[in-house]
Length: 169
Image 1 (cartoon, helix red, strand yellow):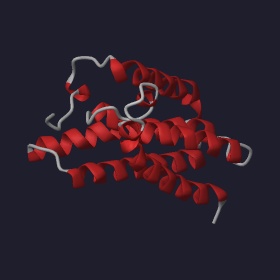
Image 2: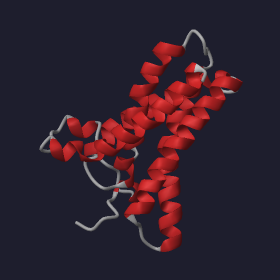
Image 3: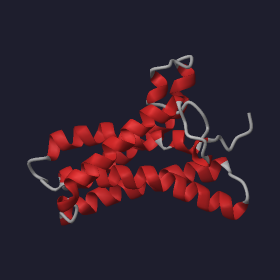
Image 4: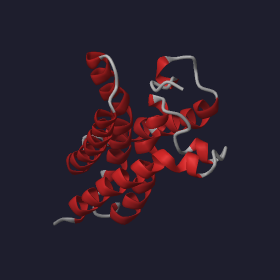
């Protein structure tokens, strides 16, 4: 198995496990203010996007440090994967909950798993095809803007549905 494929499979497992555990870290930390910037502080869709964004960003830094010499297109593929997975969560969540009229935990978990798989498949394919290379700077700029938004909107969320918890209470 080539290194990219092996590290992609490891990354999928890493993000699925750390993203799942991340759901509980804020409460485990006794609602530590600083921890809240990186882990969900509510059940809002926006906060759940952190479940893929931060673990995948962390893994991307590791992956790039290991494979940058052998896979030069990884630098542009990683932000495309991070953004794809992160923003697929609200797309899938609002699509299925809009059709069904409510949300279900099993489908929320499935949404997360699909988003992680899509993120890594996109990263893998773009690494091999190099199609993302012309967009390197805009992609990383979008990741940085998303990061700043997560930090800003954690405790100062806009008055939009994306930032409201679908779970009562």
